[in-house]
Length: 150
Image (tube, rainbow, N blue to C red):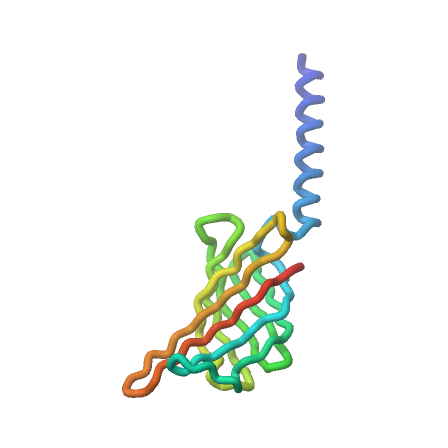
């Protein structure tokens, strides 16, 4: 009886290790880690799109399991730094990120957003948004969106 239990336990352990290693190797089991993708940056002043801000370029971000987020989009000079916090599901994280160094100065601000993982489809949806309230001036909306892969 004890030998049978040991064999069952050993087999379950082997299966568990195999499945865990496949999930990690696959890279689409968790929103944490490195992500890359073509990313669109846009600015709207009032309701008018500002063509000086509009660019589609490569972005690489890293989300540490402890929450630190950093990234770079070298073509427009944007550097990302912030935090990721767990969301309501294990396949997404809420983001609080500040952009600096962007060639379009209006993009240099703090954004809120989400990275949501689509494991079966093998991609993540990345979205950030910031608002500027216009005190006596026209306000602005700043959007950053991407489909990212490992």
